[in-house]
Length: 347
Image (cartoon, rainbow, N blue to C red):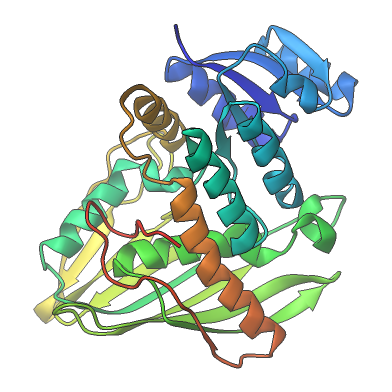
C-alpha cells in the first residue's frame, strides 16, 4: 500500500510543489483540511484530492499514515505534536518550530512513539548538494575558511503571515533558516557563536546580517560564515565557500528546480575556473522519496527532526544576538563533524 497522506491547510507550497511531489513519489494524497472549508474545497478540486474536512483535527482523525504541515510557523509545534500523538508520521515545513525547545519537544515525541519526524528542507535533497559535499570532502579547495551568502526577495506588503510577529514572521524564519542550514552543512560542524544586526519593519525582522563562528575540529581550522537575508530586497540568492586553495560559488543554492540549476563554479589557483553541472531534479520529489524510503527501511531521513533541532539551536542564538544589537552569543552543544554526512547533528 502506498503511504496515505493528509494535508493541513491549503498553502501555496502544498498546491504547487508538495502534493505533486507526494504523488510522483508514489504516495496517495487522501485528505485536506482547512479552517475555511470553501478554500479546502477549491484546493481539493484543483488537485483532485478525494476528501475535504473542516479543520485540522479532522485530518488527523482520517485513515492516513502521514501528514504534511505547511501551516504558519507558530502552528508547527502544536499540530506536529497532535499528529504524532495520533500515531502519524510528520513532514513539517521549515523552520521546524519557533525555537529549539519546541523542536526538542517534537523530536522527543517522535522518538518515544517510533515515528518519523522530518523537516521539509527540500533543497538538501537536490543532488547538487551531494556534489558539493563530494567537492569539499575531496579537498579540491582545501580546508574551508570562509562561507558567505545571501537570500533575499521582495515580499508583498499585503496580508501574509510572514509580516505577523505572533505567527512567526520575519526574514530569519523564512529565508535566514536556509542560510543557517546551508552554512552548517558546508562547514560540516556546528557553530559555537553567533552575532546579528538588523532592521525591523511591522514588528518583524525585515533585513538581517549575521555571522556564525565554527570551531576547529580534527585537522580542519576554524571558519566563519557571513550571511544576509531579507524580505524587502530584490531577488538575490547565492553562496560562496572559500578554502585555502580555491572557492566554490553556488548561484540559486536553495530554489534551483527542474532544469533551472546553474552550474557550480570551482575556482582554484591562477584564475582557473571549472563549471560543474547540476543535474535537473525536483527537490520536493526527492525529499518525499527519501521520506518514503525512511518509512520503508528505518534508515535516517537526511533532514530529520534532530537536524531541525540543531538548526534552531543556531537560529535561536542569531535571534538573541539580534535582540541585543549584535552582542555575540555563545552556542552550546555538539560541534564535531557527525558520522554519515555533513551537517547532521543532534541538538
